[in-house]
Image (tube, rainbow, N blue to C red; front, side, top):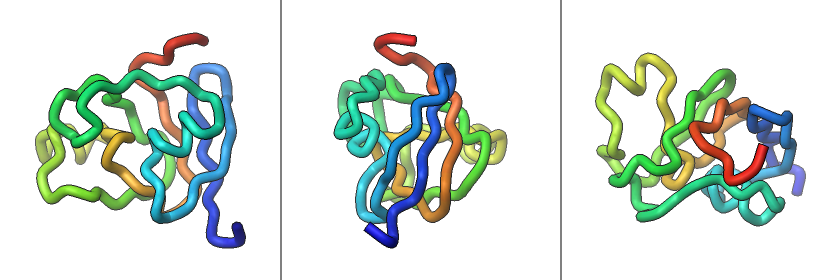
Length: 96
């Protein structure tokens, strides 16, 4: 697990590891952090969150956020893989 990145999800400060090949959502669910999701392909925006720190790579060329939203830090954890340690402000957690 030496390549794993540390992911922190606010509110609540939930922390877990994510491999570079895992999506942020998959890693969160694996760690027991129940983030909202629906389509899991970057189009429904149910998991829309704010990237507070770190870098991600998208599995799809045009996830369901605009270029402007991306520039402001919007991220879709269902199709985003970590490229560094990441801190997110989750749009909606199933519990706080």
